[in-house]
Length: 142
Image 1 (cartoon, rainbow, N blue to C red):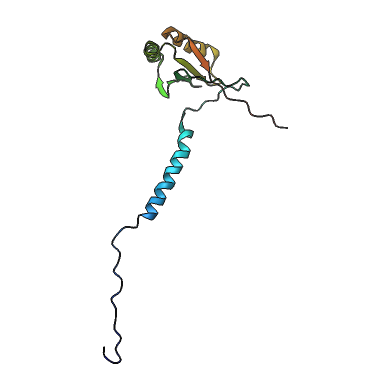
Image 2: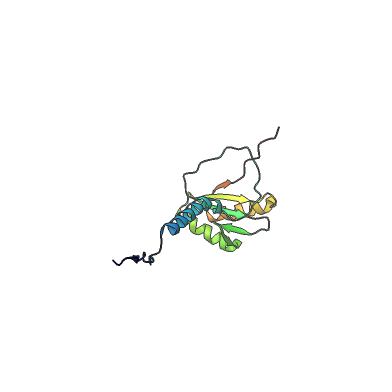
């Protein structure tokens, strides 16, 4: 070492690896968001269901969901169908499992006659267990 000279040490090398910690944190937050929002997306068909104070039944038997919108569109398990295709699908379901329950969700503005027609199609297919799905009324404000 010479007098009056400062020895320089070599600085740290730049890091060439990707820091995975922020990426993992973001991915975990996204997983939590998807877990919380998935149940909210269960039924994407907007209906104004009738309100009732009736007790909620618990069904252990297999079921299919039949939706009738205010525009008259039919959905079987969230898939749009026409009346002829609905009869064929329900007949296949009845052949596979005759004790299958039909959970009918009809908009409050659908005429009663149309609901009866859909019920008739289900009974014609061989499915006699029909349940009506309704919303609970809002609690009374005091």
